[in-house]
Picture 1 (cartoon, rainbow, N blue to C red):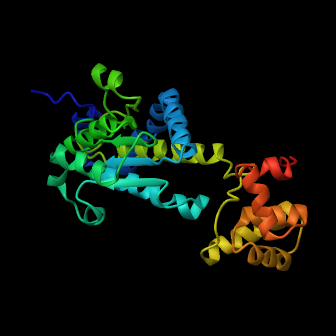
Picture 2 (picture 1 turned 90 degrees about the vertical axis):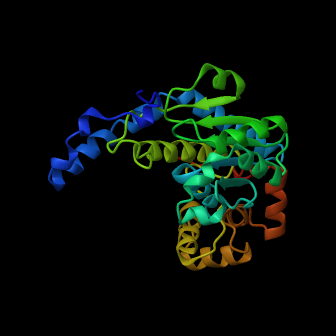
Length: 300
């Protein structure tokens, strides 16, 4: 019987890919990849709802928690790991759970995805509660580990969602708070969901977390001003942000960052208001971290 999951169907466009030369393979894959952004865009309302759920979780002291297996799990862990260096968040704010644990990040643990009880246990271990938003990621829509985790999260009172690349069942849509289903179509290599489905997953996760961080005031204009300087690249970026926004030279920017202990947003308030680091932090705290409420909006 033909598998009903869209991610497991055979792509008629690539049935002779094994006969193509390198340029032909590249062109075929690129043609299929062009369909991804459109499929993600078709889910704009569901993605926006997930963004609101993530924002609400953060504002209540909760977390955004991704749960997945294989590529889906790795992409969730990746997105979570990028939040602290990019937006200066606590590492506990966005978390990624992958079937098989940390070993599965570098070595496939395929059998780990088959046990819903393990997914439920991972939610218990993280002490999920009503403040959290748990987003299951399974491009096929059928991974038992992920369903076990999402079901347990709902039992514990959390808001729940699912990201998949096959049409969801009406029961799933009814039961969860949000279901995101970008239908990118069958993969170039049948069932290889690290390709189009994986790319769609990363686009969706990027949008949810980026949007939530913008809403929380961690972006000023389109600049990542809440970053914490932890390496030479970020030091350079932070100094250039301060130079451009405060119209100062590089040496002054370096001194401001040092006084702010490497926190660009604090340094910006210090430079704009002519105050010390402690007073700048008090201003930011009073404005719930929204820098525009402290120094005004950017002048185009």
